[in-house]
Length: 106
Image 1 (cartoon, helix red, strand yellow):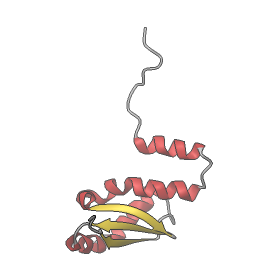
Image 2: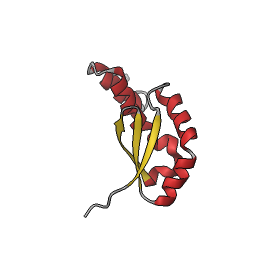
Image 3: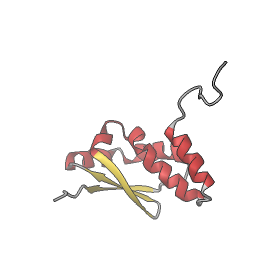
Image 4: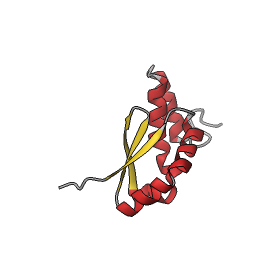
């Protein structure tokens, strides 16, 4: 007989987080902004290892970048990245992306 507690497969983290945020009675835009930060790694591709979403300022996602060359590449890809974010988190959640240089930790 099969153990009823045993799950049939893995549940994606973004689905778990979405469920948890929904149960917290958090405003919808807060949950969507959190999701935007979570999916950044997926949508940014090879730049993910060189970037980190850090905050929102209004509808602008602020992303730290490790090197000026990555900032240049991502600036050129900004419209593509905004389109991917819109697909993942919904229209109007992220209106712009601002890239900043990562500050060195002393």
